Length: 267
Length: 199
Image (cartoon, rainbow over all chains, first blue to last red; front, side, top):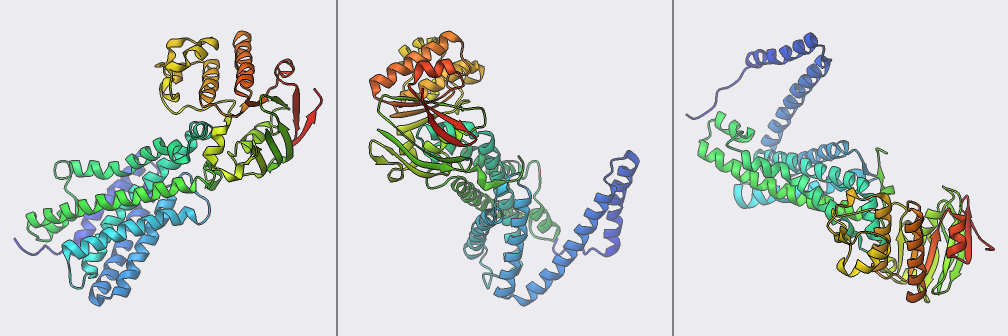
């Protein structure tokens, strides 16, 4: 079968009854979530509708400038999200800059790599490919970096006495923080490792499912999904390594001291 | 010769003193007066200003880790980074005699640190620092959690180590009798101000 079944607003309205049922359930069970459910659902509809319009304009323009600006806006929002997910974040510009910078570099490089060596659209920055690809890589890189930084800062604060005991005996900051760096990197990459291990058995990924619903041959949809998973794992690992190592560097100084005064929030 | 010159940091007014090799200097003062801040500043564990020299070598001319290998700091509540006792030592079997001397069981190498008493941990942390043979040892209440016998063993070992290794000890203590036993000179810290007091 080729092509796809078009949806009209009536179809969406019927499906939205499920969300209304959720809200009703919340009211009935006194969960206090009905307002949040309705606001979240409304936000989702508005945000996706706007994105649909933006993508339509971007796809029609095929402009490197507009595609680049859209990509930067996505990175900027994702950077805000990384910061929001931290109990303790770096003080000042570093709080936003570290996660965002690492994500921009890792997700950007991996996306350009995928576009120029595997997908090869014409032109290479064609927004129909570049924006969805960046979106998927970015979403996972964002999760990896935020988990990595969250684990790092938490483990450094909790393990302060152990780290300082090693520093006090003349070890370098690199040696003293190696266990927490390993812990942070494991936390950052485990979701994508687990996802790779269960994809196809436990879950069918959204992109692949979407392509199949859109009429794409399942074997081609699977190849796309495998490509995306490889790109995501590369981007997540690169971004997490850069962010965690950058974070440790920021938590130290030229005298190999532990600088917890450079963290803010909690405690 | 160990020299501290105009050392200052937040919470600590400029402090200067010097010590000869093999000397022990006691530091006393009420809790929160700045004793730990001073020791950490000397070890360069926190941002600080001032000059500290060991045998004429300025602290600023060597890296932080290199400085702390020579001038080691032992916290009042030392941290542990591995599960077993032995993992904290370069050569645990070589420590057997010292372990016995501090009244600790020799076979505790594989014991989990989490199961040790506070007093056992305090003595092991001291041995861990001594194993690295620093030239200056900054001790923050090293016998606060010990019974009288263990305390005497620690004092005897440190006195001998100080004499044999020609090392300097800066010893924070709340125990006036101990201060009289271990040191001939003493610094008094009051609200971040440090002065040398006649013994």
